[in-house]
Length: 245
Image (cartoon, rainbow, N blue to C red):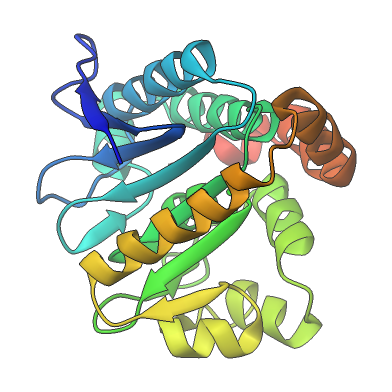
């Protein structure tokens, strides 16, 4: 399969984009925690805009990350120093909207820990694959004494079918391993390493591209399917809660 790297000047330090035929692979680069501050969020948003511009009739997106973290959530230290939690929340909401409207199937290859807002980023893809030798999914709000945003709950409701599993995620702050996440229906499959997780995501992406679906029809159906998530993401009535640090 032919592939090449697409250099994005405004996001190259934070993420990279590789194109293999009709498959795009967005990687959060570096070995850090991939905390979601405005710099990283704007880089992801810029990369997704580039993917949208380059999309063909039938394409697919894989999002993954280097290092032991997929994303450890919002950059709370940045928010405290800048006294601005709302900016990060607005940017992540915008990215979730972009993913929902993206004219292609989306796959998260979770190659490390995904916590809180990073968990939401992963779940907002159509498919979630996860490495089983390291990492867990963790909705940390209860443990860190924060009220979970309603739009986070809307994503969990839309993506996780079992009420018991949703309780583990939101009301027990469970650190869920890949194998347990498969059992609970949170992720689609577990794989032995980061490399195997990305490889499985590529295989899935190839199969999805072969279906030859019209990307815009796919996106319109996704928007119907996730209409409750869209409404929650667009609802900013929680601002007083979200702005408290």
